Amino acid sequence: MSARESIIPVFVPHWGCPNDCVFCNQRRITGQREPATAQTVTDAMKQAAALPSGAKRQLAFYGGSFTAIPEEQQEALLTAAKSYLDAGELTSIRLSTRPDAIDGAVLRRLKVYGVQTIELGAQSMDDRVLALAGRGHTAADVEKASRAIKAAGFQLILQMMTGLPGDSDEGAVETAKKLIALRPDGVRIYPTVIVKDTALCDLWRAGLYREHSVEDAVRVCARLLPLFEAAGIPVIRLGLNPTEELSGGAAVGGAYHPALGELVKSRLYRNRAEALLTGIEPGSSVSLGVNGRELSQMIGQHRDNLCWLREKYGLRELKIISAPVKSGEICRLAVEKPAEMV
Ligand code: SF4
Image 1 (cartoon, protein in one colour):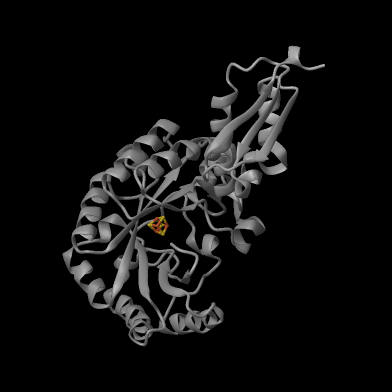
Image 2 (cartoon, helix red, strand yellow):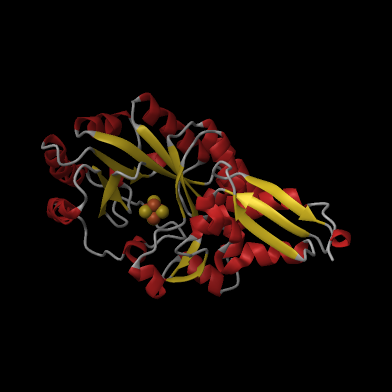
């Protein structure tokens, strides 16, 4: 999504969901409790009037299983959204739903109302993990729905999670590879957050689930991001959007961090720096160069990367300097060995 595209969210919390996935409490995550109506769409459009003129505007139905909502209510919401699309006040409509709530009839209806993008909650491509999460669908459902969505000409966004019960870093990498094979137009990665009033929260409090910490999420996501990048698939979101509700106490554990994406990018820099520092004599002074716009990502929050690398490689000094290199690249500018220092 470019900087000039804005999403106008309309939350349909938990609507259409046939069951509760163990990690999910959409009312807590979105902070919205009332069901959405055509008036909710109108209100969201009024609020969006303040967006910069010229920005592309996408109306997005999020937070539930849109295509599993009773047809009449789906149509009421879509009719309201389409009126803004027809008037040129919106550039497109997108929605999120479950893989087992997609079929030919559903896709035909969405086409009629001008929906352009469908986001599917895949979460994992391991049937055991899906069952433990209470998802109620299989990996085969994700594959079938994804193919149908692409064949019908919609943009496909796939969502995956890390740190679900029974999952592992290797499992997440396998899921990412299987999602890449489905050639989505983008992915969202949501490391598991423990939200109040969920079955997962009960499991965690009972000692039956090990929390997926921010560090766990950063470690595994730093493996996933390069896979999607190498496949040319944009990661359009990493981590739950911070909300007042979540920050105000609904997120009781797990990988909740308002800048998780930045932490992962910073970790990627740390990993790349390690490749350049391996084998350097302890006590050396080293200067590394990165693109000037990404100095803070390399240095890390609270200078974490700098301190960690200096300590791990026993460096006397580690300097990070702006250099004429591409975004994401890193180069070794100078190494002064201990014997060379006076
Ligand atoms: S994760 Fe999706 S399908 Fe599961 S309960 Fe939440 S909104 Fe519904």
